[in-house]
Image (cartoon, rainbow over all chains, first blue to last red; front, side, top):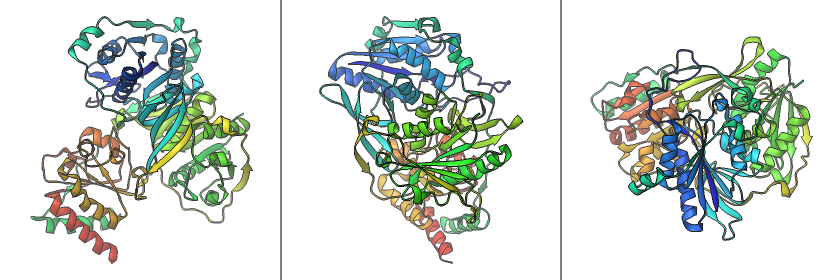
Length: 264
Length: 330
C-alpha cells in the first residue's frame, strides 16, 4: 500500500489575522504556522492503514521554506518520507493550479490511495483535493469519516457525510479521500518519532523537475485573483437585557425579538 | 463567445433548495445589466415539476437534465452531465450553492473545464467594466476577499446559502423548459452508493435553517439539550452545538457550528452557554441577529451579540420558550 498525504502549512486557528497594507495578502511574520488540522486526519488514517497493510506513507507539501517544520511534524507522527514543492514559480496560484502541481508530483510516485484534508483553514477553498483527483483522472470522496480497505486492496468502502446523514460508497482505488473531522483522533508525535524524523528524507522539488508548463501554474496559471482583502466590519456589542431575574429578562428579550428584530 | 449566466440548482423533495432562488434574484440583476440570458440547470431522474418556480424568480430558461442515473447525487454522474451541457452551450458564468453537494461538485467541474472557481461567496456583482467580482470569507471569516477572474470561462462560484436576499417572485413570468437526455452510462459512475444512512428526524439542515439554537459547554450535559429542543419546536429552529459540546460527546459532529464544523447564516442565532471563541464566530458571525445567554458576564460573546442575557440559562431558556410560545399564539 503506497499512500500519499497532501498537507499544507496554515496559520494556527487561534492566530490573529491582519491584512497587509497593499490588501493582497496577510501579515505572516508574527504568525504561528501549523499543519492544517484536516490534513492531520489524513496523516493519521494513512498511518493506520500502513500499520495494518504495510507499505509507505509519503507526504506532499506545497509551500515556502517554513513548511519544513510542519513536514517534520508529519514525519515524526510516522510518515516515511516527504516531497516539498518549494519554488517561487508556484506562488500566486489558485486552488486549481495548485492541484495541477500536486498532480504532476504525485504522477511520478507510486500511489494506491491519496489523502487530503477536506479544506485548508487559510483560504478555505475545499477545492484542491477534488481538483487533484480530476487532474489525475481518478475518483474522489469528500467529507470522509470512515475508510475500510478491501482485503485485495483494490477498493475501499468509504463513509462520507451527506445532508442529514451519511453515505457509504464503494470506491475503486486509486482515489483521493478528503478527510473530515471524525475520521480519527490524530496521534501526537512521540519523542523517538521526533528523533527519527530528523533523519527522514525531505526531497525538495522545483517546477523544472515536474515537466509542467510554467505558465499553467502559479500566478500565470491562476484563473482567480485576489483584488483586495479586508477585515470584516466588527459586530458591535448589543443590548444587555436589564432585569433582576430570568422571569423579568426573558419577556423583555422575547418582545425585542418581535418588535425590534422582527423575527418572531 | 461565452454567453449567459447559469445556475446549478439542487432538488430537495420535489422542489429546489432555497439557495437557488437567492442566486436567481441576484443573478437576474446581473443578466439584465449584461443583456444575457439567465438559465437554471436541474439534474435528476424526474425534475421538471421542481422547476416551476424558476421563471417567477427570474430564469429565462431551465435545462431539465433527466436520467435514472442522476436520481441520487454522485460526483461522477453529476460532473459529467453538467460539464457536457456547459461545453455545449458555453455560459460565461456558472453559479451553484455552497452546499454539501455544491462543494463536492464544483471543484471537480472547475478542474475538468480548467476554469476559475471561488467558493462560499457572500456577495456577487458586476464591477468595473462589468467584470464579474465576488466576495468570500477566508481564514474562517477573519478576512473577506474580493476575487476577480481571468478571461477563462465559465467563471464559477458557489454561494453561501441564506446570505443573498431572494426577490418577490413574479407569478406571470415563465421560463422555457428544455429537456436534456444526458449521455451517461452506468460505467461513468465508478464510485457506487452502497447505502445511505439518514439520521432520524428530518430537521432543516443547519446550513439552511432560519433560526438556530446552539448549546455549548454551559449546557453541562447531553440530557440538558432537551430545553433547547423545546425552544426549537416553538421557533421551528434547528439545534446546533459548539465544538466543546461536540468534543464532550454531547452532540453529533454534524451539529457543530464553527471553524471545524458548519458555517451557518440564519436570521436568528441563539447561543446558550457558549463563550464565543473566535473559531465559533467563524461559523456563525454572518447571522443577522445573535442572542447570547450566558451566566459569565466576562464571556466574549456579549461584546459581539445583538442581545445578551447574563443569567442562568437553565432558568432563562424555559421562560423564554414560554414567552415565545405566547407571542406565537397571539
